[in-house]
Length: 515
Image 1: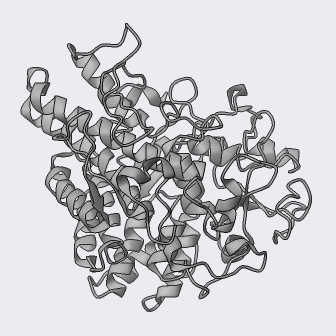
Image 2: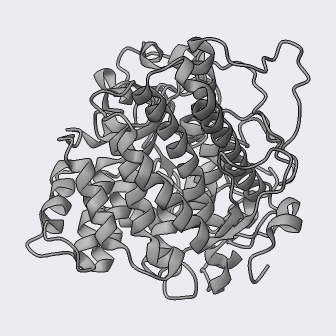
Image 3: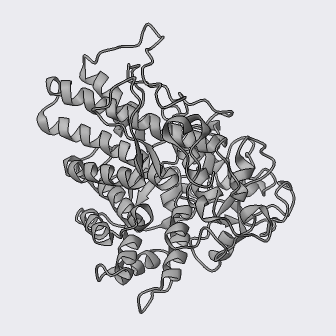
């Protein structure tokens, strides 16, 4: 069982739990008399570290209207994918905030935007508390190398939160181990956040354990460099200055490990994909397991949330689905068409229509195709010939991929397109070769690379950022169905390249232009 390789799936109650309703609300004391205010054993330190990882899949602390809505994975997937050209939420779901995401017409009172910002802020605060405690008390329980490694893990998890804060919001509160509990932290703009977190990660990532030595589910050195590479890849968007040389340097640090692509694409997204996590293609994953690390976000959202009740029952059985599909996430025609003729096209068409003229017709033919990229069946019985029922649970066992080696390969290609490196074509073709697609004789164009990124990384929470970086998101250069609220698609203004700051935080953080 994969959780046996994980550090600890539970956590102790600890005083670092901070409020998230407003930026200054950092001084809450625990109400539970069983909550410990001190760490006195290695197991308790392990529990605190596990809580930092747990913040990536748990849905507690942040108040939302539906179970799972406040998870880090679900909120950020929604903001990256539903607001772009890959998927949408059918109007069967009337949860607050979904339809404005479908149309890119969201405002500062959107629940999903609030949940994303609140989760980023909460995670950053928790990690800072851990770093502070480890720096002051960790030496009593761990040797110097282990103290450094655990601090580096916390910095990487905090770095992931700041990566999304920089990408999605462009501003936010800067919280580190020196921040005073109860005080309002300073607000940093996009450049300040970028400079602060990249500087911190550059110093701490070398202290992370390499993937070959790291425990399952924990951040490796290779994962840390993948995070830095993503920041540098988008540096021109974030700061106005290209950093492709730094991006390539970090990608090359990942390559030093000798990690290889998984042999079969579709097995990266099924129930035993933990075999590729860490010292494999999935450089950083958020583990999920029934009974231990369960969530209504993560890949539960991307399995049963994508499955449609009117689909062929044999297809649903093949996916190891149990119970009623949620019939929520559906595919936009632009993604379906982009994947035509591609072996990575994990889409069920059935009797559904490719086009989506009516978002309300979730159980009719006019509601888009069904994504079957994420499956609850294992690679050893991918078509579920054994007839398993996912342990009679709707919860997914599939680990959520955050960064993959294939993405690193495509980043190397993008670096060469921007004047850095000479092996971009080689790695581009390795991705295509694994997919059984024809190889390119010459370097791809920017449009061809963007297309390849979509075919390889669709429904992995990256599309909006890619479209922005390639100049395809705002304006009317590239149109997709229901962009700006009309079926034919329309232009959206430049300011929507950033989301609004949720109104709950405006008093202390300020608001982005245009909102």
